[in-house]
Image 1: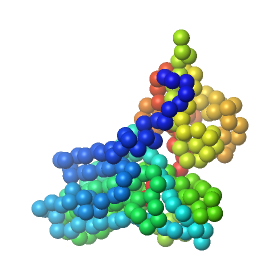
Image 2 (image 1 turned 90 degrees about the horizontal axis):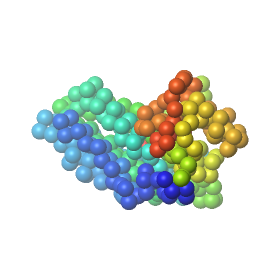
Image 3 (image 1 turned 60 degrees about the vertical axis):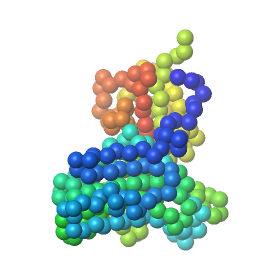
Image 4 (image 1 turned 120 degrees about the vertical axis):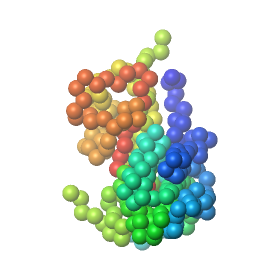
Length: 175
Length: 87
């Protein structure tokens, strides 16, 4: 390979969007550098066997501990990211009897108030979809190989670690 | 002609510490020596960064503390995987 190190493919927006689809289980995964489309996620998980469709959007917040955030930026390593997402999706389909699941994550700069993640799940009845939606998000945040950098209005920037915060935004004590 | 190498990718805290997103290092290299090589290039990285990171070799996670006989070959792809922050 060249001794100069060109930008690796996984950081080159031109190599995106990247998809992993399992039509048999109605699993749809996407990593993209362009704005997410919640309706497209809902369209993908629709099923004649579904009576419940749950959609979650994670959007970028404008502060971190009262410090104003200008924008966020995400990077991924798709060889691992898509494999991890596929495992999470398959586990959720099996455990909750889902009729469909779509997980899409945006990469690169995500301006404040725009969606960084979309999760959509469908099931025959509502309880499974509600539960699966929350559970999938928590596992994705714990395991998926994607990293968020917060760029502050004051010029600083910091890489985040999800293990530092719980679902209420509270600090988690380190073990 | 060219020295055989493997490619190593860095993310988040590892990118911040090395100042690099990727680089090529001489191959072959026993996996058990990877952290020593990185420590010699980036003093302090083992304690400050690598101690909380995973490592992948060819798209599979590996255990750098229990990898007798595993060798990173020329052309292999390695990644340092810090604690994640999706969503």
